[in-house]
Length: 265
Image 1 (spheres, one colour):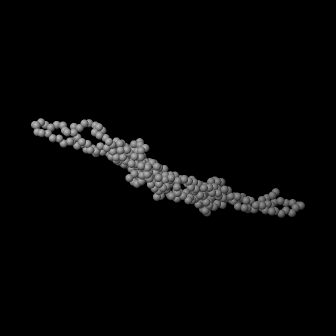
Image 2 (cartoon, rainbow, N blue to C red):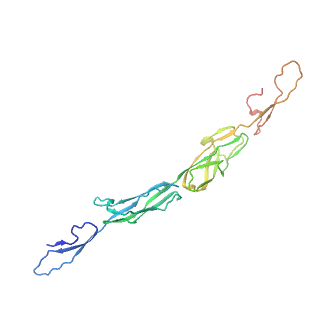
Image 3 (tube, one colour):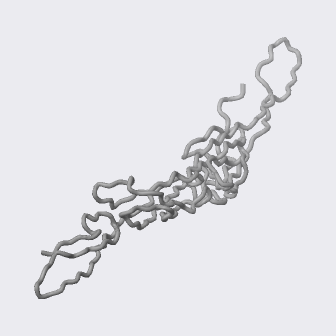
């Protein structure tokens, strides 16, 4: 019977081995043997860069990888070296997705070959809070809020990074960009009656999730002076009572004494 020898016998690891036949006899043939070969191909492992996420403006997270395809209950202990896992993203890369690449570097194994699959780094928008500044006026004086407001006296922006800017916002109260002179004195706040802020413009704002916070509008009372009119009388031994009328100084909005409650005493 044919017997087999050579390096192929009991071969396990990936390599090329000789198969050496022998063992045949014949009275009529001169037998020669030609060796064959056994090729044990490497099993395939897939090195996949793990998906990651971060917030715009933050440093990149630690980049990791996963290797799949081991056989015979083997683990990473059979490997030498490590792959290179990298991304082009930096702290200034805008919100969106960027590839995390996996490459060979010096990763090796006796019985495995490698393929590489990229992962994805998701850069989430950063939180940005824009708060309208509290403002005040006096009854009878209109307050222009406007649509192209700049400066800290009009709003504050919290959460900007990377030299991004908010250059202007729109302000309104009850959908009006001007608080009318006729609006009554009092304190107005909240999302219904307060000063609402919206429509921020600037640089880099596509990388933020913007929250707008309203502020308080205070309309102070107008000063009104009521002056008693001078009066005279001739001494008659009787106590003086009453007065000679009053004059008013400070009415606005074409108002008169009819806007007042009570009565002059």
